Image 1 (cartoon, rainbow, N blue to C red):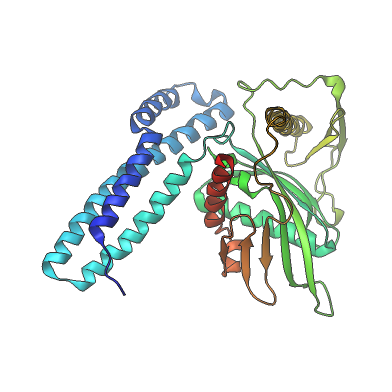
Image 2 (cartoon, rainbow, N blue to C red):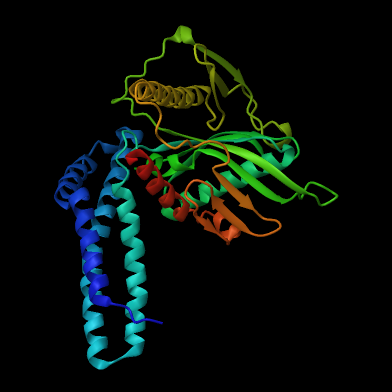
Length: 370
């Protein structure tokens, strides 16, 4: 095995860090942290819990980003010192330790570098994710539930708060659909590359003959709108609201009042259901927020289509079956756009999907630049 060229590697690390710092701009981050800290120290902060949560969440995210950039500079300096000591002492164990730290710094720099690629109009927003079972019967419903758990575990790994807004359970097992929020800055930027059709191939646990089954689920990701920034006004005449009782698996009643809300936007046919909250008023407000978010995305898509009308669509299509999860006859998860693949399917379904997300973000930037 060839010896690591540490001087060249360290120069490359410093160059990458400088690029990240040029985009992240620690000076701007410090000013933002100071402003948010002042807002967070206001005595009436928690008079408005929603606004307070946004401020504290933004402060935590900004501080975390600044800490990561600052600490990486120190880690590169420490690595250089460690290599010098190991070389002088001809210490193979210390050089192995330096190799391991080099791998760790590369990984963390890669994650920060991906963040600099999230420069889309809505990339900084929180996300609303909807998963729907597709073709494949009960296996598809089970797959939809597996995907929901995968994304919730991913959010948990990163310390991102989530709120399940609506779940529609299938009769035998799994979910017909589910909608949840990921309440963290840049959640939309990261998760938007997960939108599309996902395919599962496995021996069906629901088939008594043990046959292989292919099933599908669709993932939709939209940015959560900011009421103060986005002008999405929906006239009451364009909305139809139905109320009903919330239900759990198998149709078992979990509520004795008509608190669940189904909101239909008549001009577009977009339907949003909410049953997470106990109050009909709260469910109505949540449904309206998600409906506005979906309409915002529709509006942006229409604007983008107009811009590309003359030049034509030169971006790669997301299309169907953007990712395959194969559990039989072999174990592999492969993204069909980026070619990124892993063999540890259990880890993927347990939320270890950062590699797919990072590859997707880089692929999208490359497609946009083509």
